[in-house]
Image (cartoon, rainbow, N blue to C red; front, side, top):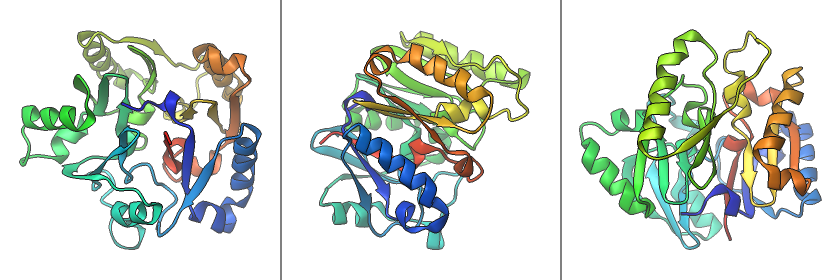
Length: 280
């Protein structure tokens, strides 16, 4: 399985550089990519700036799996819906088609495992039983196991709850209120039962936005670059300090950068959702 730390090329929707409201953000983003010599390109025929959710999942250098993107929390249709097969054709990439309903941004890839939000089970009923679904996904992803975890909220889904750090180590966050504690216990239980270790991302300052820690976890992680979301808040520096400790190799090489994404948070997404990083 191609993991984030192996990726060396990133794609963005053409709309990101076309729309005037994204001009400042795009300029800063491109400057960071140039600074770290990260090659990038733009996806044509997209109808929305968010691209990770509907694009294929890379399994190996030449294997991509294109799932059916129609998750229950989005119900995207009409002019905002982008068709992955058309985009992939324009990129010159072929993907294995699957009828499994799955949001690509909620696929957390480890070396020999994949973690998915628990919603994938509901989205694929009654066509797939749990055993049939996880069995087919295990085969498609070429991993030893597929782990499902509870979903915390709808805004950031799995990607704002858990991220892969390396080997059998993951990062969890987004459990800021007492109401989240039962879900947190379920997440930790699922991780421990599957032999995974975890670190927790927390903010010491109380902030009225209960999704803030989840938003920080929606960073862009690549082989030679980590882009940490910033929101113009006092918590930004605390988050950055934590990421420097969590990613010591990137920190030692000065490969951790920050990018203000506050404008996108109101739209329900982050830098991770705006991008599609792969290994070429």
